[in-house]
Image (cartoon, rainbow, N blue to C red):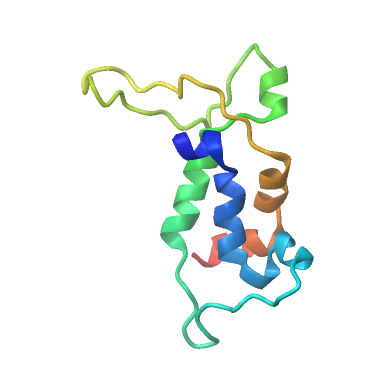
Length: 116
């Protein structure tokens, strides 16, 4: 979870997967090199799963505003030091950035999720 606190990891992973279709690519002078080809598309299944897990581990402003209940979709984690302990949420609240929210709702990313 160190990466969540130091970087916008969700946005960075989605940016990597989208390549030239990323919203960040519009601000770059040089065109990005595309991965794979028409016959050999890159398989991003594990990265899509990681992004989904990270998003489910983070809070949004709407969640923070509604303090009465937590969503059922939150990822729960086992305590590495105690295997018998029940799964719990992360002890620290990592908030999903506005850019990450924009990226996960990007139609090209959603298409990529469906294909992987």
